[in-house]
Amino acid sequence: MKRLVIGHWSLVIILAAFVLLAGAYAYVTPALEAPDEVYHYDYIRSLVNTGRPPVLEAGEGRGFGHHAPLYYAYGALASFWVGENDLEEWPQRHNPYFGYRFGDVGRDNKNLYLHPDDDTFGRSDTWLGIRVVRWASVVLGAITVWVVYRVGREVFPDRPEMALAAQADGPPLGGDYPTSLWSSGEIVADGRLISVKNLPPGTYDLRVGMYLLETGERLPAFDANGTRLPTDAIPLTTLERRPEPVEGVAP
Image (cartoon, rainbow, N blue to C red):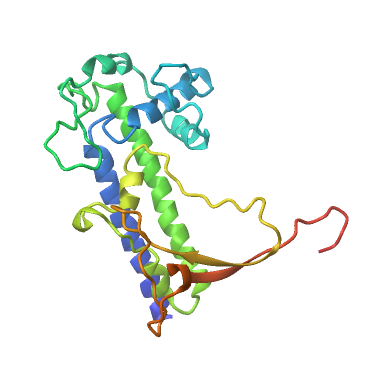
């Protein structure tokens, strides 16, 4: 019982730290400077103003209209009350010295826009709208952390510390920038889903592997006895997919 209480309090501390840090990232990152944020926010404002995704047009920058609308609808519900007193001014604020070489080390100017003094709370609706949607994304990130903990508790009901171990991340930049924090503190629809819609009924092994970011090479994986695993994939659990229920037929 004592271990269970410690596990729950540890989760509370982790969630509080996550919300504070992700919220801080969401606040200090300049408006529209997160990856592809200008397109994501454009999608959200289109839903607010027209009730539909942005129209895809050849040669235009509104290129995210093909994305699934659920996340953007969530952002629109969170920020529909925010005005647009400066939204049309941002194209004229484009930084002429912008030169971001993605993935390369360099001293390029990585700000996409020039940010005037009035790009702040109370003066810029875009500043406010971006922060509202980012903080709404932080809420989704916190829910993700909680769900991972609950899954760990279901898999290891007698070992609450295993649920907490599932929160561990492999952050880049020497541990200063966790990827879960990056996604939740910015307007980026970047979820990972595994579709099993057409998977036939049966029993399946769930495995996981890791890759080197620089080369895409699969990292070697070994079992507890030091034997290398086939395809370097670590088995996690076994899943059973049952046949779809047939109306009028008892399972």
